[in-house]
Image (cartoon, rainbow, N blue to C red; front, side):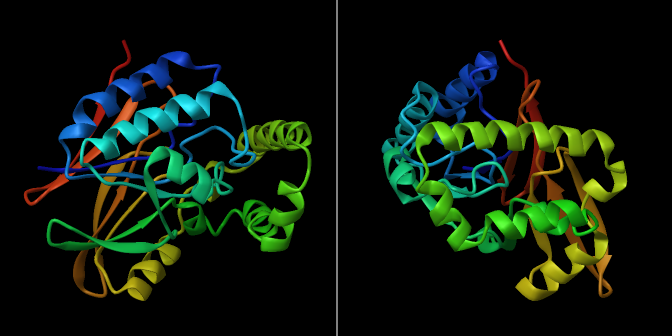
Length: 241
């Protein structure tokens, strides 16, 4: 069997076809895997586990179906859903993993992360990330009424889109030095991440030895799945409909 990895689904009520595609993936292919990893940005925005909207409940039920079929499901928080906590994970049957966890994938120790920490050239984003990842900021935010949190999330999404339009394309990709530093710190030769929406398998040399960086694709127009087994890794798209 293979391990399946996805990220950057950005599930949202505005794109019901992608939600339906993800539900089909969970009901079919994912239930035949040996494990499923979601590397962040499962949702377009996450304002707290107490959100009573229909979409999170649907997705939780679909994910729990995978776990109930005997397939473990793991989640690494992204920049859109870093507030997703233990309560929702329990409902969805997911195990929360720290960003930057090392797991053994069919004999190869692999660094798993969302990927935003690697984009060190984007100073404005990194400053925002430090602010919202501060535990005190998170406690104050989650103490606000749900409506106020949703309004903040809408403003943050608009600001993010504006930043993406105005920022240099290059600074929004990973920094090669940050990639090398992360691999050295984890003492591994392979990493898998999302965030940049630039799916590819990059083979390169690190300190004179082979290394690999695999980037997962987003689910805006179609699905994107990484399949890893003892024979290697394969990235492929999932057409909607």
